[in-house]
Image (tube, rainbow, N blue to C red; front, side, top):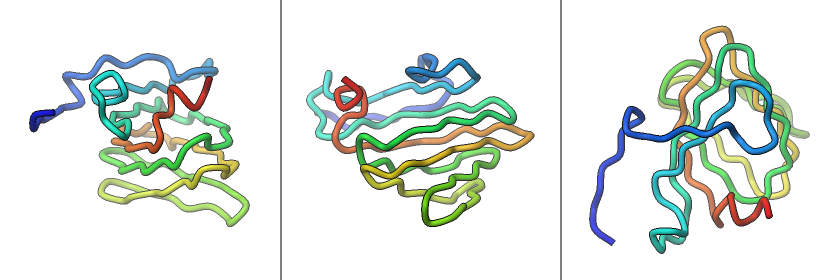
Amino acid sequence: MTVRKFAVTDSLFERSPGQDGEVFAANVIDQRQGAPVSIGFGRYGPDQSLVETMAVDDVMVVLAGRLSVTSMGGTVTAGPGDIVHMPKGSAVTIRSHDEGAVTAYVTYPHWQQARG
């Protein structure tokens, strides 16, 4: 693999699997390029919720807006520059606030393969 740079504006967003709301994901690197992790961007419209049991370890970096992530351990709210780790097996609710949010993520293993 060669060194590459990715921007949110270059990404092809698709509705997050199983979601009806304004929650989108855009992988920029994944198993198709032979990478051991999936790397991409997420986009959440205002006041959206995603309920998920994590099939992979997921690290999310908030680039813009705010998100709250609720799990058995409580709720954390993250804004630009904050990192949230959601371990595999965690039941989480990710909620965007009034302004929505843009994130970058890294998952291990690949989230698309883990979803079936």
